[in-house]
Amino acid sequence: MVLLVLVLLAGLLAFIGSQLGQPNRWLRRVLGVLVLLLLAAFTPDVVPSRSSTHPRVRLPDLSITVSAAASDDADGRRMPDLSGATAWLNSPPLTKNQLKGKVVLVDFWTYSCINCLRSMPYLRAWAARYKDSGLVVIGVHTPEFPFEEDPANVAKAVRKFEITFPVAIDSQHRIWNAFDNEYWPAHYFIDATGRIRYHHFGEGSYDESERWIKQLLAERNGQAAQPRAGIEANGAGIEAAADGRSMGSPETYIGYERAAHFASPGGLGHEFARGYTAPRRLELNQWALSGKWTDRGQEAVLDSTPGTIFFRFHARDLHLVLGPAAGAKPVRFRVLIDGQAPGENHGVDTDAEGYGTVTEDRLYQLVRQRAPIADHTFEIQFLDSGVHAFSFTFG
Image (tube, rainbow, N blue to C red; front, side):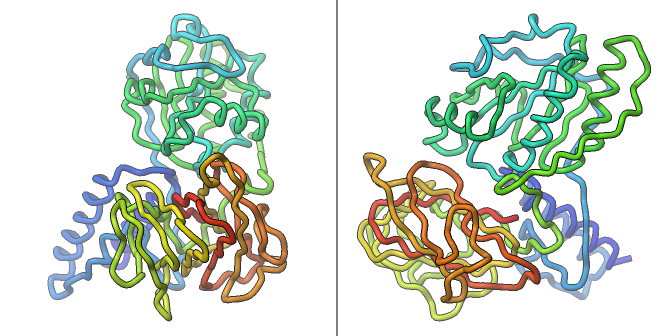
């Protein structure tokens, strides 16, 4: 019984760490407390360590699959208005009154969120397949980092990822707040009368989401839901589905406001330049800086070369959100895995020798390992100063 409870709770916490682009940190803490209480109730002689409250729990030789958070909103509230958008792409401004009589799928996303990007192939496919049946897919781009507030950056991402459905730019979080949303990605399914009937947070459960699209369209069109086979939208490159079975590293922020597992001696400085050194050895999911950096609330900026970031990770893919130096000056870098060039394990933004260049503010895929997946030390050496580093994600 105790093992079953631990398995279910570990799976739930693992889901929050890997499925959601930005989970509510208070929810993480509450779930952590529940773990402690249940452990105390079932095993009073065991005192769990602080690591028991971590949102990703690695259980050796145990595979757990938990679907992302979802809810059937049978008596759903009315769809909030979209008037909070600061601009629209691919469409003139849309209002909820204009959308009455349509089935609407609202997707909250942001372009540096790997979870959002891995969902995008399905959104594009649904928009194309069901458009003539009455479905309208609307992307609501709500930024996490300041550079994502720039409409030009959002427009560039929309073109890059071949998004043709309407996109509302929600740089002031007005639509986000109107929906009372807390997650990237988040999908809200709205029927033809304007009521939210279903929502889904995070990646995955695409079959269930498509079943809801079919059901709501059938209600709209006065016919039975069609048993047509669901879409298999296999993403490529950075959009490829995560390898959940081998992913043992959580999203990790570099800015001090949300940083965790930092291992350089002396900890992170707050808003001032200082020299850092890396420890001789990193434990799994620890990271470190080397060189002169200024750590800010959401980012670290390299003040002078040489400068390096290290991370001990376990995952097929490693991504890092990076931005160029002031004035959009490109920053060259080299990636090493366990001190060696990545070879065939390089990501889409590096070559086999590990070289690449930061040219714009976005997510960079730096590692895509071939099987078997094991613990490795990632190292990125910056050959120019001024780079902005925001967060690691994995897949």
